[in-house]
Length: 180
Image 1 (tube, rainbow, N blue to C red):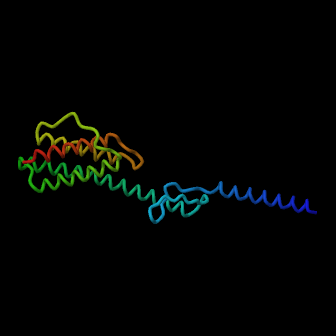
Image 2: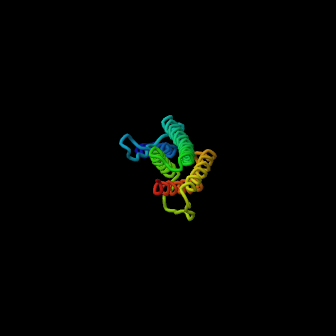
Image 3: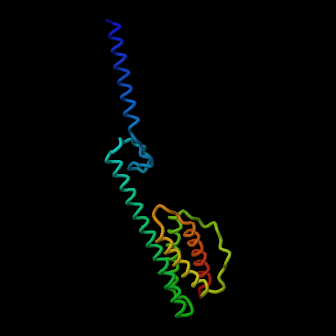
């Protein structure tokens, strides 16, 4: 009788451990999830869990919004560059309100470069010969940057876009140093 009781207890224990192991293997951890305080928190969810689906949808929605803002920044960059070129063509110099446009252009370019994962390591070999030349190059490169950002997707990183942003930041510094 005691041997039967021990045998049944052993079977029950083995089955319960097997079931417990299967439940843990079906669960998923959500990498990179954070709790309210911003700490990493690897929570486990079972497949098909509404919470994990909700988090993924929110992450995708945020990525799409960030990409839309990036494209808008590219358009802003092209617009500001064109306005600076027109202002210089009309007055043969840049006015004080153009300095504000130049600052906005620089801030926008830094945001674009940061979003794309670039840094200011590289220096361009070609320096402009005049302020007019710098503004023309700035307008041309910013139009290329805008087109490059529009043609990309939220899942891609373009080395050309990073290079264009760096070139534009150098041109902004050149224009700022040569304003009359």
